[in-house]
Image (cartoon, rainbow over all chains, first blue to last red):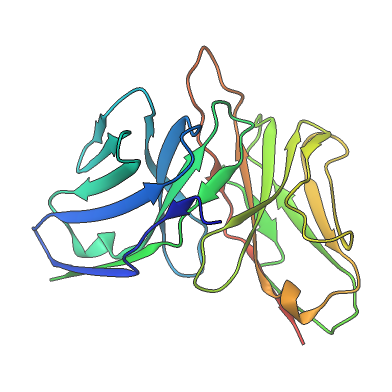
Length: 113
Length: 117
């Protein structure tokens, strides 16, 4: 069973506009949610996380929103830049640093100049 | 550099051969994870170490997969009698111990791309 799902395999936006990447999960026991960015032939790079007790976390151009009742989170990138073009993975974790990450399938974001 | 280092970056082996993949975590990170990523998919958990102790190996797909971290630093993932379905990218990640409720994210290496012919 796929506990974390990213239903959009790809997203294309214009430079300067907002990018919104979505993620759904089924396991209500997850405590943290994370977004990773991945360039080809590189490992995933941590972007931003949010605790399950919060509904928003912001870091520069990146904001993550969590809707626990809907078991849904989203990553907003404003303004989008061509260098943001990459695969974005949503991941969910238990409470401690010893908890495994459960990943979605990823969304390929393309930001057009 | 100060990141997670994995070697080799690419490995080609014939079906039936044994392979060993190495991971050097970030210095001071007590938690170390191995993940397997198939083409077009997200990474999937294989196993977890806290220092030298392997606390969770529930994601290892078969008894041909074996991981160790004898001194609590470098880790090796070994695959015996490789099969074509073992072809994937193997990612290593490390993290600090959680402190005062502060979640410590995992940091990933660039992976080893394993191809079994």
